[in-house]
Structure formats: C-alpha cells, structure tokens
Length: 429
Ligand code: AMP
Image (cartoon, rainbow, N blue to C red):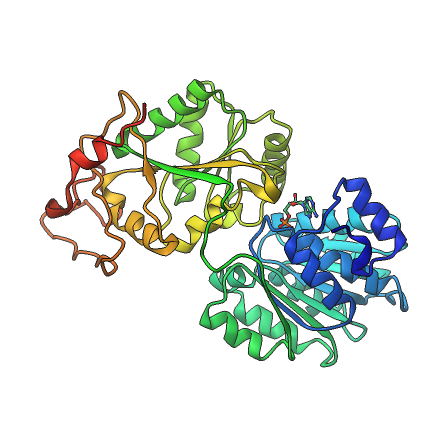
C-alpha cells in the first residue's frame, strides 16, 4: 500500500517521498485517516513503529486548511516527556511540513526562555513542548490556547512515570473544551486509562504491537558475567565485533559517567547522556553518536526514552532495569522500522530477580551465551517462567555499609535454583 489513499495532499506526499518512505507503517495506515477525519485517537505504539509520522502527517493535513495562528497562539500542542523527544518531533514536523507555509517551534527546559518567548510572539501552528517549560511560558503569557485545535500526548506512560501528571492536568485546564485529542503510549496501564477517560472522547483505538512484546527483528541474548567483569566484557565485545554504534543502558547517572570513563580509558569513543548533563552536552553527544564520531552512547532510561536513531544496530543492557517494562522500551531502540538489531544484556547473579521479571513479562527465556575468559564465578540461575514473581529478600543487618542494591559480588542466587550444568551447555561456540 502507498501513502496516496490515506487522504494526504500533494505537499505532504512530496515530503514523504523526499524522506524515501514508500509504504505507510501499520500505525500510519490506521491513524492517518482517523486523525484527518477529526476523531480522537488512543494508540498503543512504541517508538520505532513510525508513530511520530502517524500523528504529524495528518495534523499537517488538517492545519493546511483553516486560519493561521494569531500572535501568541498555537493551533496544535504536542506534549512529550523529554527534551530529546521534543527536539526529534520538532525535526519531523519541519521535515514533513517543509512544503507547507506553517510555523512550528519546540520549547523545553534547561535552555534560555527568552528566545522561546520571541518565537511564540508571532504565534505558531504547531508547538512541541515538555510540560514544565510550557507551564512557565503560559504563566508568563507567552502563549495562550484559545485557538487550539489539537492536543497530542506522546509517550503518555512515560510522562506519568516521570511525575508529570499534575503539570498535564494544569495544562489541560487551560485548553478549550472543544478540541481533538490524540494519545500515544507504549503501554496502557490502569493509570493511563484513567487519564484517558478524562481526555479522549469516543476514541478510535489503535494497537500496533501487543502489549509488552518485543520486536521480532531484534535478536536478544544475555551474557552471564560477574559484576566486576562487566566493563571489561563490554570493551571486549565492542573491540572483538568492531561495533561502531552501540547504545548502552545503565541504571544510574553515576554508573553512566563511570562506564564512559572506563570505555574512554580503553580508547573507545564514548559519551554519557543523562538528566544531569546540560542540554548542549546532550545535543552534542547525540549528534556525535549519530554521525559515528562517538561509538558508544551510555544512557539512563529517562534520557534515552524516545531517542530516534535510524537503524541502531546494537543495544546493550549494562545493568538490567528494575522495572521490567523498561527492558522492552530499551530494546525498542534497535531493529526499528524493519531493520535488524541486537539487544544484549550483561547479567550478574545479583540481577536474577530483574532477569526473571523480564523473562516472565516477555514470556520467553532469553538465550544465554558465555564469553571465553568472562565466565562468571557466581552463577546466574535459570528463571522459571511459571513461578510467581520472586520476592525481594529482607536486607540482612550483618554487613554495615553493604547497602541494598550496592553489593559488589553477586551472591544472592537462590541455592536451589543453581543450575550451572544447564546453562554451561548453552555456551556460545
Ligand atoms: P518513530 O516510531 O516515530 O520514532 O519512527 C521510527 C523511525 O521510522 C524514524 O526514524 C522514522 O524516520 C522512520 N519511519 C517512519 N515512518 C516510516 C515509513 N513509512 N517508512 C520507513 N521509515 C519510516
């Protein structure tokens, strides 16, 4: 199927052709006609499904008719959780709308507010924003919404995770009641459904990938390894396989900085991206990663959310996430829009619980590969997918200073679940 029957006009079809897209992705096929017709939409779609074009293209179509924005007004508001995602959506709007006489801008925190106020002065057809900065701008009367036609909440689940619910509610209270609402979320938890109930009216519901499944074109495997050996193993894998573009996830900002230093010490070009980095540093790190002058980007979950890097070949979980759904989000960075990807997790014995929770969520036991010279002393037990979720053990008091989550060795394995023979038999050739 081509884009032509979806109801998009010539200037937009031309921009799509300029991008080299020939076939709409499943979410685009469903969302574009519904949004052009003016329906509210609730879509379960992860990054990588083409969802950004799925809402941007029909919005541009709607905006190409009707009155331009008046001074200080916006006709469409797209709310996103992170600055990076806002910048990427802004880029898509510019690309897809390049043959249309529409104005758009992106606003987010961490940078000067005055240039953003100036841009809003003339009014914009499309405003992409993170919630906190938008509220600041609204309080300063830099923007007003009486002309607003469409509201988009992108990555709504992550916005709730990041605690934006009050900001979102405050923003919604400033909008006209009559408007089109589009809500995108990777998952539809009860909290998301609660938010949706007060937001969307009789929505067209779209789901392009079943909840919490991982993409089929992503090869996933885990490397059992002792915690202390993880950074050496990562350097080994990068050098041995000559990987040139690797996104690595760590659980903490401190862990991201430390790992970046360790990689640099092994002459591997790396940069960290997390919430403590300035916007300029984050933008620079991402640009250098995209043009391959940096080979490894070490990121925390929040910073990496929504990063759009075309055909990212390798994602490494240096630490497993505490929230199993984050595993699905993380590996969604690779194998995008039909390309193949690899997602590899370095798993130490103390991460057995996280591993079991992930395997239970994705309903599969991940293939294990042992790497020569990095075989762990502390085994990572096999998870039993039919077992109930593992309970966290109470912390023992006997080791002062050995705080929860900071153990250096992985001795927390349940002795009954140790199955060394079994996993050694899966040793990689
Ligand atoms: P998204 O899910 O919006 O983050 O998009 C994921 C990636 O797919 C982006 O790099 C888009 O440029 C790309 N993309 C979106 N729609 C299409 C399409 N119809 N054909 C090929 N690539 C696409």
